[in-house]
Each structure stands twice: as C-alpha cells, then as structure tokens.
Length: 436
Image 1 (spheres, rainbow, N blue to C red):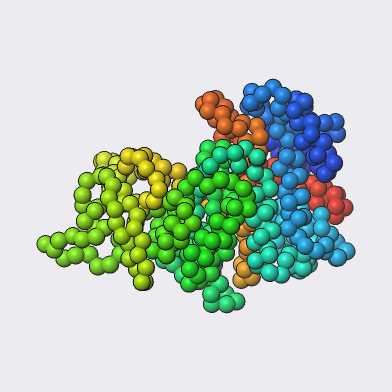
Image 2 (image 1 turned 180 degrees about the vertical axis):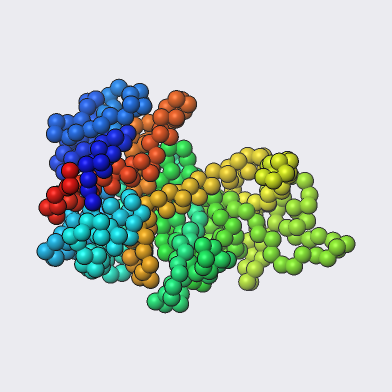
C-alpha cells in the first residue's frame, strides 16, 4: 500500500515530480525558456543539470514526460469507457503504472485494491481499435509525435530489425507465432519488426509492425518503410539484420532506390576438404576489399557489391586477440572496408532499444495479438519520450561533461518517478486515502 516511506522515497529520487494537468503542461512548454517552471507546478531540480545547453532552458520536469504520454495514449483509444470506476483517466493511469513498473494489469489492480483487473481489461478491449492494422497506424503515429523538427532537416541512417517476445502457451491461430531456436524456455515467439534512427541524440523508434509466421520479409519491409515516409525523416541508407538477407529483399530495395548494408549469410553445404571454394566462400577467403557478386534464388537474381572487412576482438576466456572476417552485401555505399564496418556497427543501437523495451513492457500471458501489440507500443512510446527529454535538455552536445550528465538521466529512473506520480494521480481519482 501507499505509505509514508514510499512517499518520502518518491521525493528522494533525483527526477522532478509535479502535479499535472493539460493546461499546466501547455503552460510549462510555452514558458520553458524562462528559466523556471510556472506557478503551481512543483519541481525537484536535478543537481547535475545546472549546466544546460542554454541558461534559457528550464529544469527538468516530469510533466514533460507524463503530459505527452497521457495525451498520446488518449489519442490511440477510439472510444471512451463507460464503466462507473474505469474512466478514461483511470484507464490511462493504470496502463502507465503497469508499464513503468513492468507489471501485469492484474498485479497493478491488486496493489490498488479498488479495481477489478477484468473490468480494466474489458474496458481496454472496448476502447482499442478492433483492427490490428488500424491499431498499428495509431500507435506508429503516436511514436512519431515526440520527434523534433530537427530530425527531418537532413538525411538520417536507419536500422531495421526483428524482435522476438517469448510466449509460453497455445496461440489463437497457428500463424500468430513464429518458431525459432529455443530461448527463455520456449521455441514460440511473438515477433515484431521495428525501424529506428541510429544517430547520437536521435535514437527514436519511427514505427513497428507485427510479423506473422511465414510472412514475406518484403511485406514487413514495405510496412516499415511506410512508417518512415509518414514520419517525414529523409532516408540516407538502411542497416539491415541478417534475417533480411534474401534476393527478394535486395531486389525490392534496389527497385525503391534505397541504399542498404547487410551481412551475408553463407547457405548451402560446405565443400569437402581439398575442393575448390566458389561463390561467397571464395570471396571470404580473399583479402579485404570490394568485389561484385550476383545473388540468385527462387528464379530471381540481383547484383550487389560485396565488402570483406576484418574485425579483431579479445576472447573472453583466453584473453587473446582473435581476428574475424566480416562479409557485407552493399548497394550504393562507398568507402574503405573499415568505414563500412564502422557504419554497420551503428546498427547495434537498435539492440539497445529492445533492452529498454523490456524495461517498460506490460507483462501478460494473453494470446490476444491486439493487446500484445498495444503493450509493446506503449513501451516504445515511453522510450521515445525519454529520448525526447534528453534531447530537450542536452541536444547534440559533444562535451564529455554534458554527456556524463545526460547518462545520469536513465530510463529506469524516469519510469520509477513517473510510476510514483501516476499512482498518486490514480489514488486521487479513486478516492483512496494514503496510509501516512
């Protein structure tokens, strides 16, 4: 239950806590350049944020995250719940608390003690769009809402990857789940494709989509590229995971005139000892550099450049230096092999988004793909708002001192403070008296 110790712990965190209403938040945004928050909004300043990009910037305020989160989530819901207790405001607060604390809806309602998890779940199903396609469109628009205008002023490098969420149970339909190697005690997963900016200070997720079993990668790629076009971010080149290494995907990207970079997969049986190497294996045996190669498969053929690069690393057991060859399929990118290697390294920024996605994903055991899609979208939205908050106060600062200050505002800390504030708001809506 909500106790005095928890309340004091809430105030002891380094992140700002304030009472929120839409009018106060708009006033805060309009007056954020005056060096202080407006009257009526209580803020706890960051000791490490005294040096901002400009002395005209205001101190960090939790309303800068809570306000957009509530507003954007309300735009995703298409209907207003009609229950006596589960109103629209209560439903949004419950969803935010469950996401920030990585709890299920059942555990969140159990902590409150005055809400039924079934009534919350029924209200959520009634307010969400009935179509998965419609829900994806609304959630992708919500993800693009916090994007600053500066992200659209020049071409950006984007990464596309697939993320698997383990599922233990029987699906509603066979095609709802994908099957991979065992991980987390299961071989069945709900799969989602995401497209993300991978440049410093602008690592926003521009869109995501649900990937069904046996779905063609070109169809997934088309949906993600539509999200990029809707966001208005100019595309410089795509960094793709090895799961997209197919002839049809490369032919599609060339037809769309989109430069791309992806690792090569060596398929087929390895040659026996003494036999001459051919194809991609022969290119890998050669020196680092560039060469042309024609990929063939399923009646299609496409020609790309092959870049062979070296990577050195220290073995985690022997602590000795080892060397590894990397082979990439490249189209309309140039530079030395080391430049191509370092360019592709930026793609691993999207892996960090998946780790942070787990920090704010509502836990569930449901087989309903609609609810699962919504829970993943909420976690990506909270992460985008955190990236926006860092940009608001630090921008593209290259100063090491500024970067150290930015790293102190971690996503987990923001989620913890946001959870406390949403719980406070939720208990006031439900008329629950805290045990002080």
